[in-house]
Image (tube, rainbow, N blue to C red; front, side):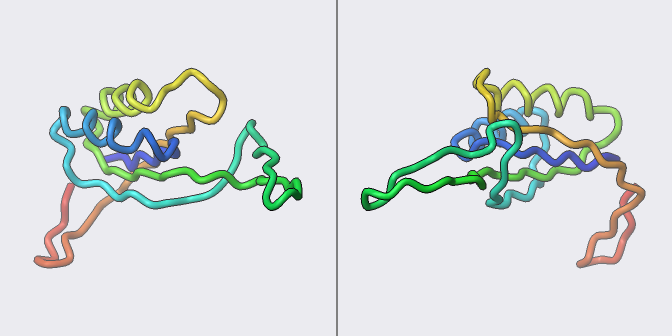
Length: 109
């Protein structure tokens, strides 16, 4: 199993969720996060005063997938989240050794 962590634009969450649903991946965690990569933020004007916004709003989607469909899931996320501009995000792949269902205590392999 692998944990896919995707940091994407907030307006792309529904598209990514729908793309993963087509692969029959229903369980996911979505978190509002802030950060920057190559964009390094931007300047904004508030009440006539200019200030630097260095941490931009992003969304983090976490989903655990079987090893057999990791490549398909990554491709679905990338295609759904891509705009072609700086700031589209990243996908991280992390190995998952095991997981346990809290309700029953059973171990998933």
